[in-house]
Amino acid sequence: MSKTRDKLILACEELALKKGRGFYNLSLEELAKEAGVSKRTIYRYFGSKEELFEATVEEVMDRVLARYMEVLGSERDPRKAFLTIIKNITYLINRQVIADLANYYPLLWQKINKLRQSKLESLLDYTLSNSQVKLRWRVDPRIFKAAFFTAMTEVINPRFILESGMPLEEVGLNFMEMFFFGAFELLPAEGD
Image (cartoon, rainbow, N blue to C red; front, side, top):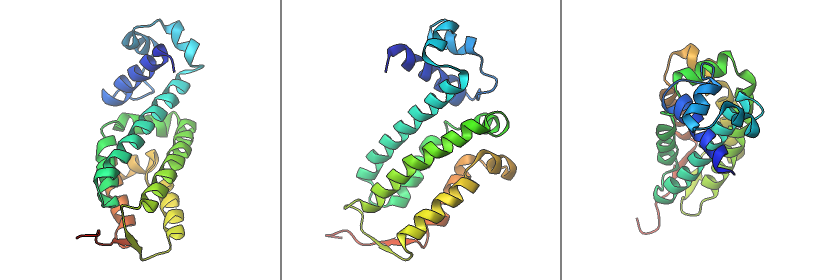
């Protein structure tokens, strides 16, 4: 990846996510200024503003996945690890981003959802097969995974979050508790 492309993604993350501007009202002029490049330079790396948004979301998701792997290495309880990650990412997904995805960028949300599902599926597979975490399943893991991803698509999406009036963190925490409570139990670690 080029330094200029990285600067553009970081500028988009800073303005849209961290500073709460969202995507819709963010101009290419603002992005160029934040990245220290010309507006024309943006089009050398991205065919549209939406492509830049998509690349930004993908980059953030990759970092979240890497952070999750770190947390999982130090946290034996997968519920706590997932909840830690939810708390770590909710500051990035502000209400304006959620509203923009629901109202102006539904196709971008569909792409994000597919990306999120593929990343979460590998993350969930890793978590469930992690030899440091010993689980006794109360339900068949295949049913758990299918129900988890189906419900995630319906609940953790911009439209539901806006209509419920709940913050993303609250939706995420409730969702995770619903799925982890009762699906399995942690077995004591050797030596406990």
